[in-house]
Length: 449
Image (cartoon, rainbow, N blue to C red; front, top):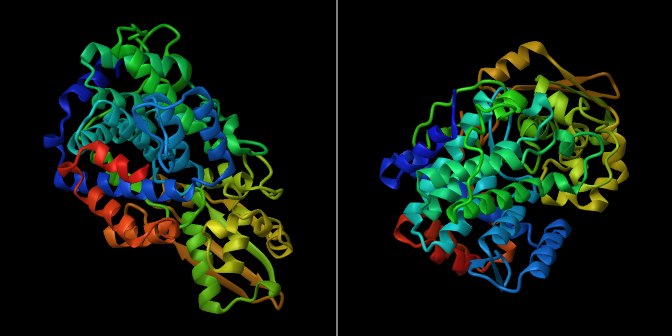
């Protein structure tokens, strides 16, 4: 049975030197991906709400608020900067049979802790390895979605462990940090069901903030219920059931996908497929009678109508969790990027009409294939004259079986954040991330202010 002591000892035993070159490289790519997304999210209304709230509460602090000429405490910086990396729903995802969390939700908290504690880039990579590993192992071995809890329930534990690494907490303090975080901050799945609202894109920022605060409390001597997992009415009894984790120095990062499209994780293969089909067959959207998607059970549940109506789409939060909208917009525009989530585009008659002829079904065979590591999708587009075009996908570019390397990530960086940066600023960020162990965390955050 996994305990807080198991996780705390893993934190204490994991250092930069323990990470393979492949793990170091993969973690750096995760950092660059998150920074690009954060830059593009600075002007979004919900992230502006977070910024106003943070600055209402604090007038300055030692940690950089990315994209702003201001600082804050590590706690508030974790909140603000995680909101940036998460809000656009363009972040990474860990693919497990029963859960799909976003380990990049832990990055900004680790960076804030590293800046506060004056740590090196090598220290940051060690903290991220800890956070990614714990997040992945919890998702794989202790999924919580079917019990009614949101995946940020895992995030707060993983982030607390990563922050504890950067703050240099000892074994007992780390136990207490994980205990406080995991006891007090279990989020409900209602965040992503029914009529989805903007909290969906901010919930993980709240988890990162709570994780950072829990670690700082523990570092200052606060005890927590260290029998968090195994105790009476504890995490395993109430939330997850019994589980065991098998922790390695960051190897779970290789099971993380990079999103090619601005879309919920489970939509990636289907969106890629419908774009390929539309381009290959020169499909005229005005002549489409219907779109049928056969997918796996998780996709049907979350974005295909199993947890709420996915045909009533009026805002960004609803659009990026609606397979009907995403497939319709991708077929019409041959793309699914940030512009497809502008309010005028969402409400336009062409996509609103087309999304209503999208049919999503779950196929048991595709579900089994998903649980064995694929992300399958079968898309049929039927025209008014009865002609049907089909595309079948096993995965997508960015899936762990077809990872996006540095060149692809720099292309994504330019596409997402290029308009906000000069060439020199862009190149300096990329160079710093690629050589992170040669820098202090403060060198990176100075470029993000």
